[in-house]
Structure formats: structure tokens, C-alpha cells
Length: 102
Image 1: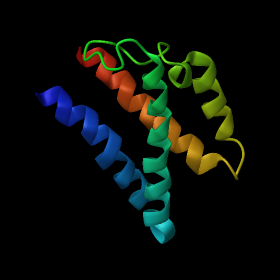
Image 2: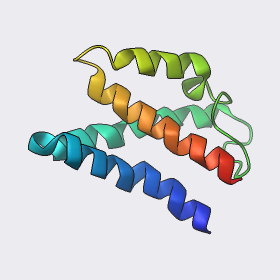
Image 3: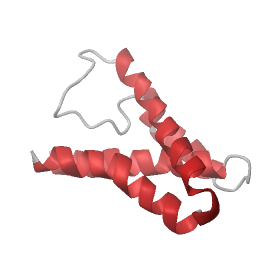
Image 4: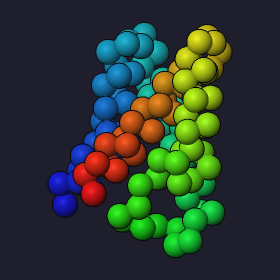
């Protein structure tokens, strides 16, 4: 049960802290964008079964692949994509931590 709280805490609370600490002026807008980056989980719909509690998402789903992660990292270097890239990498980090908890 603790893994549930850690996983979703990293998905929702940790990004809120990052948004508030580093983007104080627009933290609500940044946090909203961070939450929108969770749409990368739509790639779970391509898996069979769609949900497996013991499956590590990293490099299993297309938007969680090493290539996709590299693209998210490259996005950090461009001002227009930086906040989205941070949100995507926070999401990947949360999923990576989850891989080690199972």
C-alpha cells in the first residue's frame, strides 16, 4: 500500500513542489502543465494487459521508451518546451522509482 502513496505522491505532490519552488510567479499554470504531461500514460492502452501492477513502464511503453526519454531530455534545452520536458521527466522519474519498489 505504501508504494501507491509513493507513486502517486511523486506524480502529484512532487511536481506541485517543483512548480511552487522554481516557478513561483506562475506555479499554478506550471503545475497544470505538469499534470497534463501525465497524458503520456495513454500509451498504456497499447499494452496487453493494459494494467499490470508488477510491470515497469520504463522502456515497455512507447512514450516511456529510452528514445522518448532522450527526446524529453533534449526538450530541456529549448525555452518553449522546457516546462513540458520537466513535467515529462518528472513523470518518468516517478515511474522509475515505482520500478524499484516492485
